[in-house]
Amino acid sequence: MPEQNQVKITRDYNLFKMVSENRDIKEVHVKKLTESISENNLMSINPIIVNENFEIIDGQHRYLACKKLNVPIYYFQSTLTHDDIAHLNSVSERWRSKDFLEYYSKIGKPEFLRFKDFLNKHNLTFEFGLLLTGYTGKGIYASIRDGSFTLSQKALDRAESVLSKMKTIIEHIENCSFDEKKIRFAYKLAFLKSLRRLVRLDDYNEERMLNNISLLLERLRPCASEEAYAEMLLYVYNYRRQIDKIELPSIKERYSNKGFMRDNEE
Image 1 (cartoon, helix red, strand yellow):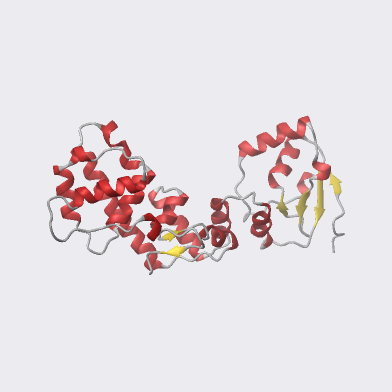
Image 2 (cartoon, rainbow, N blue to C red):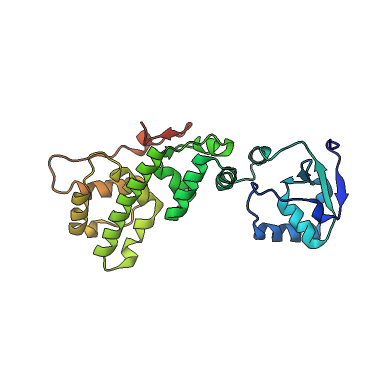
């Protein structure tokens, strides 16, 4: 049993082991720490934390920086386990949501593996991937941190379908335009959010939208907000129709700032 909270010192770098479930090493961060420690070594008051097997639970970047500088490692042993890695970093707020995704994927949580594969498959940002899978609101990030995040195959299939429809529209805009600069807005997040809201509607007709884009390409232009893009898309979609017009729910109706909402399984 290790002596709790007793800081020790060693130059035996081989004593320590890296933990595969921890965050991926960022060389830029190691370099910054190396420069900081070389100028003012405060490791004695900021030791790394290891478990009984000398696996580094917290401080892997500091460990590598000290090893690179050939300076002593300050550490203390704890009864913490691999399961405490994410919680420790959640409390300290040093991990980003993507770091938690990596951690829970590495330990084999199916929901996180499914979401990570989806992001990698389509080269999506973390935030837009969440949006496509139907999550809205700030509370979702708490579920990412504590590992309670859920993502059913049904939700993922819906996201794949929505993304496919969005790509069809964007590719059609590109094919209709002779000026790439004029259609850069099609990759803006505000436009993508509005387009997602449109193609998710049950009565959305893709053929109608494609035909109207061909007719009204000049109507498609950069806008200042998501709602402005939504109005633009609605105008194009409903062009010359007196009946069967569609409306988009407002942002206030669709997005909740308290907790989170799965808008694909309502």
